[in-house]
Amino acid sequence: MAITRKIARPLLASMFVTGGVDAVRRPETKEPKAERVASQVARPLGLPEDTVLLVKVNGAVQVVAGLLLATGRVPRLAATALAVSLVPTTLAGHPFWEEDDEAARTGQKVHFLKNLSMLGGLVLAATDTEGRPSLAWRARRAAARAQRAAARTHRSATEAISLPG
Image (cartoon, rainbow, N blue to C red):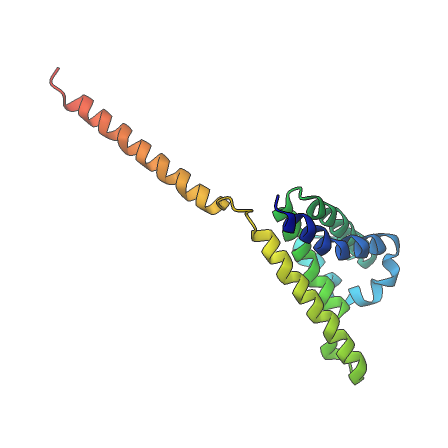
């Protein structure tokens, strides 16, 4: 793993690990803000509409995925999980458009944009193949090989049938 990945992944993961631990330990502090998105997230996924439980689950996902990303274990999957967890967290936690006070609006907007920046980093981490071909490229290559092998088998079978016996 390149030195930049060894440094960048833990830096990116640090906010999720610390925030996730806080959400698991003290979910009630996040409950009022989480209420606004909890049911919208829970219903389509078939999850219970218990906001405190959802805050804890989201926090646990952030801790586990953050540690996986920081240590370089399944980093693409970990970054994807963090990105998915960040969207409702951002919408619930930093709705700057609802603030009447200009100073509060500015503060929430800064936090909202910070989270968007982290989302951008997670998208990069989720798509980073570390110089190896992507899964899509490998799948296309395997399909092409299988197609060529099938064509060879078909030609061989056709030739065997057409040979005078």
